[in-house]
Length: 96
Image (cartoon, rainbow, N blue to C red; front, side):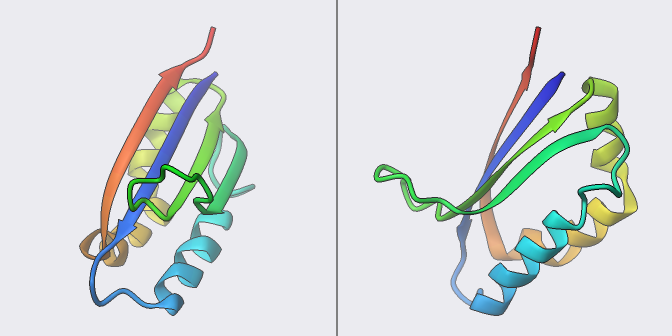
């Protein structure tokens, strides 16, 4: 198993529609990305969020599935419009 966690700080100029589109497009990965076993995405409700107001969790079958996801066309299309609108933090962890 391999865990991928991400959090976003939305930059000035991002809109509620951007947040909704990100949620919709990330949720569309479920069932479409081989080896993606679990997926959760949405508003970060942590009291000490440090300005990271949106995030998610993905569990992959293994690191190879995660690497394939990184290059997958669905993921790449999302990144094209999303990356200019966010400051992101990621955490990737292998599971025993």
